[in-house]
Length: 353
Image (cartoon, rainbow, N blue to C red):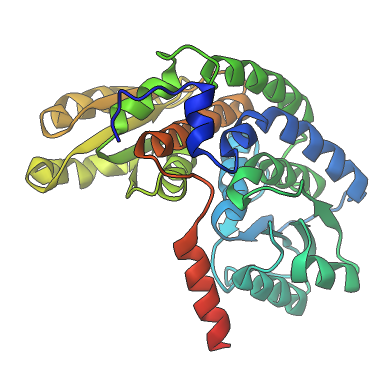
């Protein structure tokens, strides 16, 4: 396949058999639906001096990272992600643990749910069902439902809202419902601008073409660091290509030198996700980094977040990256829906049991 192929609705539909692009474009609707679903869960409010731990894996865990970025310096207590079989060793009975698993059958998250119960931590679950949903209801743990029929990674809007709402409920952060409403409306507009029916030179399509045939290395800074990780994961799962991520300013103390050997190994592109509301030295670092590594790359692309609030800026970059990954899949002739290697791994693990 090649980067000159059309990215119009018909061309995308011919490759995207499960219509993943529609789920990305519906992110605004997902956020509005998620807020309603949190209300239906009747969480109430409580005090967690130990903060909030979001336990989850893959597309279900990303809400913890993105939610923490959206809360930013408004956080009153720690909001951290646990991505594994155990909780942080400092987790106590005054910590809230949000167990996030779209399917409800993620073994690592089930282990964290059990561990949180043993510790006596306050637990909340966000899931579409599965074993996690069954155990939560059996043990009287509140369940925040998510919309069905999605790939876990496509439920990012639901997961971010769940994290922000639980953070507000347990005192780890302020209520950001007004910001979420504004962000949802802004995403509707971006979906029209960047979607399949939008102009062929729109930002998402142009970036996908620029990344085609290369290994993307996505860098973030402060608020955009977890978004860079999201881009990396979406390029891995949707476009089925290797992609990597760095964070500024740390990357300037190591990864910067590694670019010297890039041309000997392959074609690498650099994407730097920027935000206006970061330390001004980070913007200068992004500028200098771009100049220094440009000769070793197939292209350097500096991408600016959009929006007034941190919530809006985080989610604008998430939608952009998600669309870039779907368009990158279409350019490769790859259906962005299936994740066969992950399914194979899970099957083999289940056979071990």
